[in-house]
Every structure is written in structure tokens, then in C-alpha cells.
Length: 119
Image (cartoon, rainbow, N blue to C red):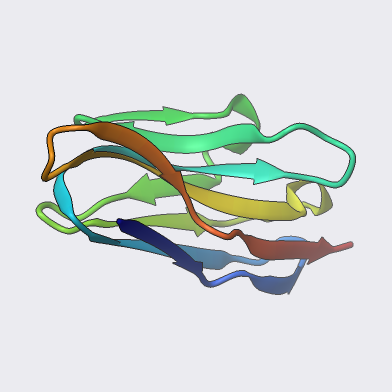
């Protein structure tokens, strides 16, 4: 019913930048929140940055380096990543908390996009 598609990952040297994009589509009545999570090999998935009703939350490890944004009235979210470090290497997942046209609310995940930062 809802599709979440990420793009923009890749390989970058330490200190470089990348921009991730996430677009949602489907039977969406309202997006209640969107955000980014990441999972490195052997580690649990962790929050990177979220926007919920205009409130932005960042993981401590990315504050000052990453910026999350979601244009008004657009079912999209972006993650600008600067000063990337090898520790940022992970699969990055987009999450959308959606109220469907049926009235039900669900959390949807994208398929993930790989970000690799070389030292």
C-alpha cells in the first residue's frame, strides 16, 4: 500500500559528503513522521535523524554534521551528510510513519542504501 524508496548512497572518502533522498508513495493520507536509521555490520539498527511534526531529532554522533529535511507538503525526506567518517559506514534506511486513507497508521521501511566511507 505504501512504497518507501531511498537513493543517494555510495562510496566516499573520509571528510566527504553525500545526500540521501527518500520518497514515499501510495495510499497515504498523512505522513506523521519520517526519518533515517542506519545499521552497520554486526550492530543493531540505530536512529540517525527524524522529523516528526516539525520536531527534529539527531543522534549525538551526527549532530553538527548531518541535516535532515522534509519539504512542506512533500512525502519526501533528505539527509545531508558532511564530514563523513569511516564510522558512518552502514546501510541507511528511511522510515515513514504513515496514516493511510483507511485511517490506520503504520510504520514503513525502505530497502536501504549503502553508505561506505573510506579512510
